[in-house]
Amino acid sequence: MVNEAIEVNGLNLWFGKKQILKDINLSIPEKKLTAVIGPSGCGKTTLLRCFNRMNDLNSDARIKGSIIIDGKDIYSNKTDPCSIRMKVGMVFQKPNPFPKSIYGNVAFGLHIKGIRDKNTIMEIVEKSLKNAWLWDEVKDRLNSSAFELSGGQQQRLCIARALATNPEVILFDEPTSALDPQATSKIEELVLELKNSVTVVQVTHNIGQAARVSDYTAFLYLGELIEFGLTEKMFTIPKDKRTEEYLEGKFG
Image 1 (tube, rainbow, N blue to C red):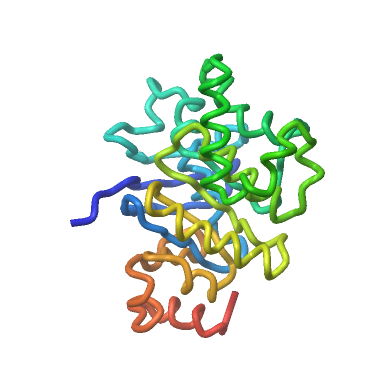
Image 2: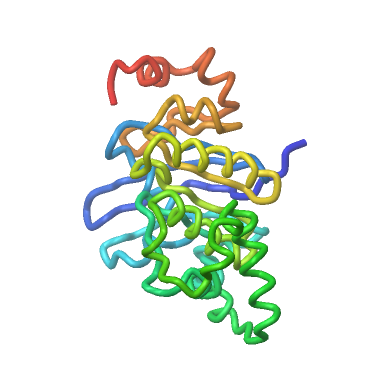
């Protein structure tokens, strides 16, 4: 039996008067990799940003429905958005290291959590960099600027930064779209490794990538969830004609 990491019930979202997401109902399995696919402008990134309340940063956003993580509705008035973002990490389309050292980037969330013991912080920084497959490349220059790293290294640093707060879920918003093929391959391998310990939800425009890395796939079209299920099954025998046409490249 597959446990649910995220349960989405009747989710609707508007930016101003424009409705972006329409009555989304979705159960995302724990410690699996779920890909979110669909044509540009269909609401993929908006849905992803609902899972850690990043859309709250847009004053025009209005949300109805619920998202349950750990048995609690993250949109309840009692829920602190900052605590959600510790629990649900995010890695963006382009690497976005902070203007700090390599060490400072990974330790950032720990300082926010109130962790002050230097030995504890160092242990977590090392573990996070190892889990992001970056430690051996940077262990001798932790105090160097994060901007000295290559694009692929910067993205792995951002993954290490997300891992440092010990999240239950990591959201990836097209994490390889700005990277070369070699760096992309490394990130894909890393993400496959990560799902053994954390739930991964990844938005991707790359159908081949979704087929390679995901266990489950959600197909969005015009703000609606058209189909959700096991990737292998959906890509072989899609239930909906729109899914079939999108996978065949007839639109997108």
